Figure 1 (cartoon, helix red, strand yellow):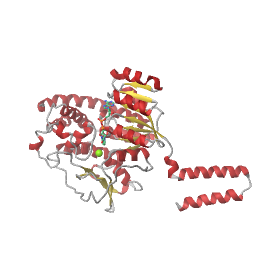
Figure 2 (tube, rainbow, N blue to C red; figure 1 turned 90 degrees about the horizontal axis):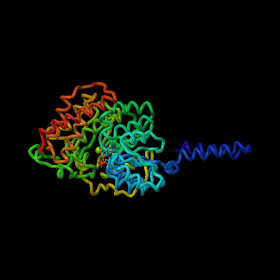
Figure 3 (spheres, rainbow, N blue to C red; figure 1 turned 60 degrees about the vertical axis):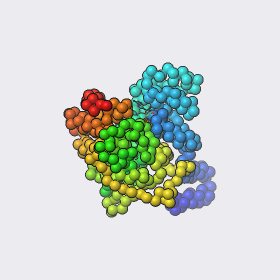
Figure 4 (cartoon, protein in one colour; figure 1 turned 135 degrees about the horizontal axis):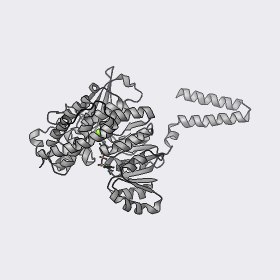
Length: 432
Ligand code: NAD
Ligand code: MG
């Protein structure tokens, strides 16, 4: 800060001592540019155009709330949704993006005619998501599509060297090596939205990656924390959707109840921060106040805390590298005086052990696991299979599918399809 001030003073001295008008003008310009680069308030006022992929979901709608609360900082460039045409139309009328994509082709005509008068380009289909992600019409892509369906568009943005606020963890679970290698090549920036990874990202500001001893991902434990298999055998979707601390989309809510979410997050963290498997730990912290921690080589531990509210990491990712003010409720330690920690029960919540093993195995194992998990979660949400049966199907899929140590993108695409078919067959054994 002192250095900046001294530089400004010295530029002023030169300007006032010099009689050459051209040089004076050039120095004034230099000063203005320098002030702009040094002034965080001015940097914040640079308008960022946001492409909200998955705008009708839990993350997407909260991202739109953040964007709308900061109209001087953010505008909406793109909105995409799979099938919720009514909400998509309403969002487009409200936010006036340049482009809208409706995934479900059957809904294209309705969306197009509703937005006809507004000079909004409407596209449809999976390929359109990929094409729009590669366009030069936005500054930050918020990857809020759920599941494997988000992979191709996120990868397209990475290939173009874009900045991505990444909520879609499945992209890194399936193809983390490919995505991060491509990002290193193109200069694409992956800024995590997942609260745990946002916490680690924030703890690492100003730190050297080589100084990390380990990271500690916190898990709330979900709605079934402390329960045993004899209880879980009878649970149905309505119980599993009742998360104690977070309101989220259906798929991630079931993943949280089965602890698969924490397994996916371990793999997500491995790729985001370039960690060794042994450096990733999970601890159950039921209050969800500490969003995750980093332990450094000197034994010091940094934690990031806050009330459980996804708008916080969403806002952080969109505004990065700045912090912006908001009126969200504040953490008050007088009312959050108890922070507790316990080991995760991997014998009961087998998905966490399965995901840890898949992370260690590497190659196509996480891709197969993710595909099988998407199939069983969908079946569970449709009341077609048991809660505990989900782990059996996932485990069998990983065992039965051929292992590929260094998969290509095409391998991932094929493996995802084959694992889905296999899981659909295997889950019949656990049907209700
Ligand atoms: P959601 O189900 O609420 O919303 C998903 C969005 O993706 C919707 O807009 C939907 O239209 C779109 N979508 C679904 N299938 C699609 C397809 N085949 N093609 C194109 N678009 C499709 O999900 P969510 O809870 O918002 O989660 C989104 C992602 O963010 C997930 O990867 C999740 O793990 C991650 N995440 C969510 C939360 C949370 O609090 N919800 C927290 C951390 C991470
Ligand atoms: Mg999370």
